[in-house]
Image: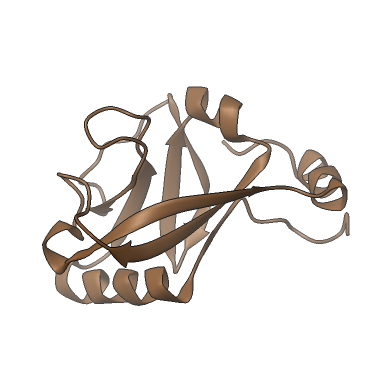
Length: 127
């Protein structure tokens, strides 16, 4: 498995459908995993560039063609888990684009298995 790239974040079909709906209404998008302030630890969806990332943030990858960021300090806690972004009925984060849709993004996670972890170590840390 070491030749295969292992994703750090993925998306469910429900979340992908919501992302596509939001992209149609708002154009290119981006995500930032909230670190616990205001809206808990919800994945927040913004128009691309609306949320300014900096040296304290890393890009974990893309979901549905949309970059997904997290703070470096939060990544230190979550680096052993694969994040799965889902969409469920409810109210989204206060500043997140899905709020008025009646749906909200939700982060689910699972631990990497040994083979995935070896592949991730070979890939190096995200930047």
